[in-house]
Image: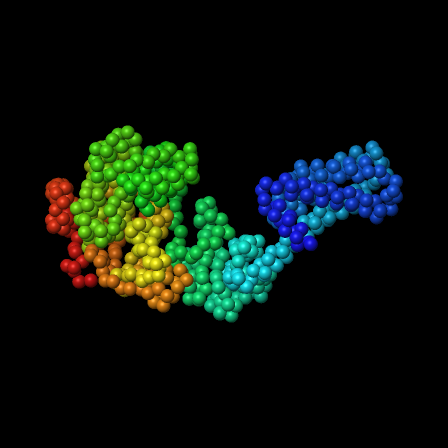
Length: 627
C-alpha cells in the first residue's frame, strides 16, 4: 500500500502539469502537522486541551502556512530536498512565532514562551521527518525497481566515486527503465575502497578494473570523472577497452561548462577520447578584439571545418556573419542550427556561391564589405583530386586567388587561409594546390594592407575527409575495415580544437605567417581502426576484419607539418608555432599561375603535374620517391 502511494506521489512530482497538486498535498500535510503539534504541545505542558477552541489552532496553522509559502518551502522537488529546504522550514517557523503569539494573545492569553519554543521545534522536526521519510521510501522504491529489473539489466561498473559518479548512480537508480544495474565502483582514492556509494561498494582502483569486470560479470563500464586530464582519461580507457565490457563515459568538464551537455549525459567513448590531448587554451580577450562587432565571412562555411568556424565565431558577437558555400544542403544545415541557437541575436547571412566565380564573389564583397575572411572552401579528398586535377586547380588555387584578390581590393583587415599538412612536401595534387595557396597569400601580403595568413594542420576527426566516418560505416556494415598500409601514420585533432586554434592564430597574425598547429603525436591508422572496432564492442579480426588494401594514388606513409627550410618560431600559445616564410620569385610565380590557369580552363589534366612541379618545387609524386 505504501509503495503504491509512493508511486502516485512520485508520478505527481514528475508531471509539470500536476505541480500545483503536489504543492497542495504538501501544504495540507504541513497544516495537519501544525494542528497536531499545537494540541500535543498543549498536552505536554499540562494545558487543558478541552478548554481551547478551534480558533487559535486555525490562526496558528494559517500563519505558519503563510510563512512557509513566503519562504518558498514548497518550490523544491521532494526528491531533491536537502539542507536548503530544512533551513527554509526552520526560518519560516521561527518567523511565524511572533505574529502567531500576538494574534493568539487576543483570543487566549494563557499560552507562554515555553509553549511556542517547544511547539516550533516540534513542527520543524515533524515537517523535516515527513520529507526524510518520503525520500527514504522513494529511494527504497527505486532500489526495489532496479533489483526487479536486474535479470534483464546490464551489470554496470562505475569508474569514479566523486560528485560525477554520485550523480550517475542517482540517475541510474531513479530511472530503472534504463535497465542498468550498478554493482561496483572503482576509485583511485584508496581511502574510499571498502566504502559504498548509494549502497554500491567501492571494490578497488582503476588498476583493478579487469579483475572486477571478470569477477562481477560486468557488462558495461561508465567512466564518471568530469574533471580529468586527457592523458589520464586515455590511460583509463586503455585499461577498460582490454576487457569484454562495453565502454561509456560522461562529458568532459569543458563540454559541461560550455553548456553543450550536462554531467548525466552518458555517451559512448569516442575515438577522440583516445587522443590523449589537453584542451585547447584560448585567449578570450583576443577573440573579442578581432571578432566582436566585426563583419566576418566564412567561405566553405557549410563544410566540417567551415561550419565549426561559424559556430565558434558566433559566440564572440560578430556584427554580421556571412556564410558562403556552393553546396546548399550543408549551408542550410548550419544556417538552421545557428538560427535555433541564437535566433535574433545573430545577424546571419547565408549565400550560395562558388569561390571560382570572381564576379559573384566581387558582388558579395561589394554588398557586405566583410572585415575578416576565413577561407575554408576547398576540394580536400586526395584520391578524387588525383583523378580530377584540373578541378582541384580551379577550386583550390584560383578560388583562393579570387577571394584573396578581392580581400586586398576591399581592404579587409585579415584573410585567414585554412591549409593542411599535405601542403608540406606534397606527393599529391591536392597538397600541391594547398601549398600554392600558401604561396599566393604570402605573395599578396607583401604589398597589401590586408593581413594574409595561413593556418596549417593535419587530419581532423569526424571531418568529411577523415577516415573515422568511413571506418564507422564499415563497422556498421560488418566489415572489413580497410587500411591502405600497416605503417601509415597521421596527425589528428578534433574539429573544435583545430578551429579554436585557427581563431587563436588569426588573433596573433601580423601578416605573412604560416601558423603550424601542434598536432600531438602521430597515430597509426591501423591502430585507429583497431581501437574504433573495440570501442564499437567488437574484437578486431575476430568479429570485424581489418583489410590492408595498399597505398592510394598520391598517398604518403606519413605526413609532415613543416618543410625543412621553414624553421619554427614560438608564440605565446604553446600549441601554435610560426613557419618562416620562404622566398618567392614574384614575377615568375605570376607567370606560372597564368599558365596554370589556361591549362585548368582547357581541362588539360596531363599538363597539370608539369606546371605544378615548377610552381611548387617540393612537389614530388609518391611513385617517384622511395618511401
